[in-house]
Amino acid sequence: MKFTLLTALPLASAAAIPALLPRQDYFSFGNAFSTGPVATNSFIRQSTTTLVLPDLQSPHNGNLGLWPGVGTKFTDSDQDGQLVQGLAISTVGQGSPCNFDADDVKWCITASTYDGEQTDGRTVGANPGDHVTYDYKYNDTTKQIDQTVSVNGAVVSTLSTTSGVGAGWGTAMECQSVNCGTVPEHHYLNTTLIMDIADPDYSQTLGLTGASGDLVTEDGGKTWTVADIKIDQYTYT
Image (tube, rainbow, N blue to C red; front, side, top):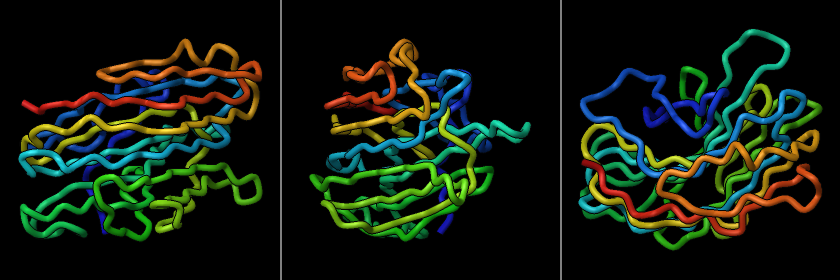
């Protein structure tokens, strides 16, 4: 199933996230934790994070997406980068893969990549409080980025795409169609970014918008971790 909840993390600055798709009647981003771009001689080889699903937005309006994304670059061509982004989606009504009535309380979970069109893996329902782990790993053999999305430790969705290599990483809170109301505070736990080549200055790219978390390294910039990313409550207006 195709979704229209997606934009790309820009390669120049992952702290600002512009829309690539045409603006709808309502389109807005909320709070975010963003990093990038990487050093020119490196890329993000693997990223892993676990989103603890909050309650659905209140009122349960609009199309809301929470996602950790890797904006990519192609190092051997002039091709535009893509966005590798596993999704937690809250939608209502016709076309929704999980919620059909306003009082439904499921999140929809899927692996997904945006390259001008949306490509999705299997979509499953999940509940507030569930732990959703998003793992993106560059595959040297296939030259693809392999996504594995798990709910409470069980793999539920996978996707592999030829998307280049990771150039920046960040979270997003994205609302489309109509005002999405208030999104509760939520957390991304045990975030790890593994670089191809150590990038000792990567923490200087950190951008925080209604978010907090300490991006640290213990090996000179090869591996970066954040124990707890807190995304503050946000109300769309």
